[in-house]
Amino acid sequence: MSQNSQLPPSEAPFTTRPVEIVENPYANANRDYDSQMRLFDEELIKKYNRSVPRYTSYPTALEFVPIADNAEAEILQNRDENTPLSLYFHIPFCRTLCYYCGCNKIITKKNSNSGDYLEYLFKEIRHKRSLLKGNPVVEQIHFGGGTPTFLSDDELVQLWDFLHTQFEFSTKETADYGIEIDPRELRPTTLEVLRGLGFNRVSFGVQDLDEQVQIAVNRVQSEELIRNVMTESRRLGYRSINIDLIYGLPHQTPDTLKHTVEKIIDIKPDRLSVFNYAHLPERFTSQRRIKEEDLPTPAEKLTMLGDTISALNTAGYQYIGIDHFALPDDSLSIAQREGKLHRNFQGYTTHGNCDLLGFGVSSISQIGDHYLQNDTELPAYQEKINNKQLPAIKHIHVKIADQLRRYVIMNLLCHDYMDFKDVNMRFSIDPMTYFIDEIQALSEMQKDGLVDMDAKGIRVLPKGRLLGRNVAMVFDDYLNKKHQNRFSKVI
Image (cartoon, rainbow, N blue to C red):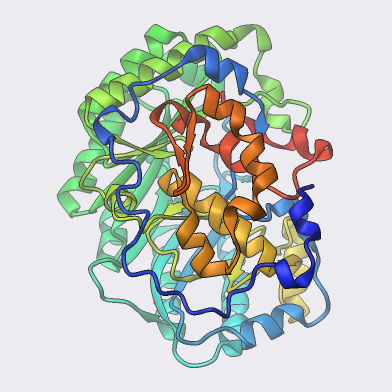
């Protein structure tokens, strides 16, 4: 743990000092976008390839503790009513099991469970809404899972209509209403129904278009199906479409993945998520169906990553960070260039000004400087709702010292930059003194050309962007050996 966490109160950070920054120091902090993905250094990636948190929060979820009685109600009641909302709904159901998946999902062939689950969602929504002051405006909604389109079209309409009875929806052009879909399970009318409701973003997993790979992971879907979904989504006017790919799957080779990436680039989604498959059968039972001898070697995975980055760079995609790419005119790319990008439990987002309110089993909320997580087991979640209890079971209150580190970590991951003057103005500390241990710890990365440090701040260089999490973890005051096997590696 950093020595700075032991500073006396007179030297600890505080936030009562007015922020007087006129210009955003993070706008175009990493200005060399044209070459940002070209510096793929295989040896450096091997050197720094270790288990690192993904930092969808700081402190990470591993630091959450059991929540005190009545704490969730007090947090909701004391929420700043002028802060807009981002709503997340977790739908845990899938009809088929994807063997690569490391999520807790309920596999069922029927919709019988979903209608019942909706009733629990409605009760949770009513309860939480009754505790909120004022009339908060919703600027962002995301349906995740599982497979949200496991819900029937009628159920999706029912949930959406119910939300309109509880919340005021923003009509701004920047409002984001997104949903994850499974192309294999769409009804003929689903995309049209969703667009008619107001959804303007859609995301779906492809993972790989090679048939042998698809069979090995139990997710078979044709290229024709993917193209049809894209064509229909474009016709209906969804303004942003995301596709997920995974490298490191069984029977994948650099050549087969290269063909998949070429086809996906031709389809031209607005955003792409390119994830590393982490084979952890001891933790995830579904992965036990994948044979280790069918997996590509670490060297092959490195080649896949390098080839994919090169192809996306050539096709004009901007590297956002931590597996994510977007076209230059996508709102994520624009927000990054303008220094307004944020990161939370939904990943990279343009709505960091919102409180995140999660609903459903295992969902996570961020209300001000409070993180809360619902029960992760469906029966326990349902029991709480039946007993008219709020469903959060874990919680952490982010103290001032953690707010400082969170701010630094998130700017490094979103904008590849830590501006010393900005941090000084916001937290009334001298960053070069306060973070002297961390700056010294970065010296080797500076020698390797991953970061550049001077009197103005710390900049992640193009060669270091793929290793941004390694840079960020230097500022993590909680990280220790007991957590190392819980995080994913860079590749």
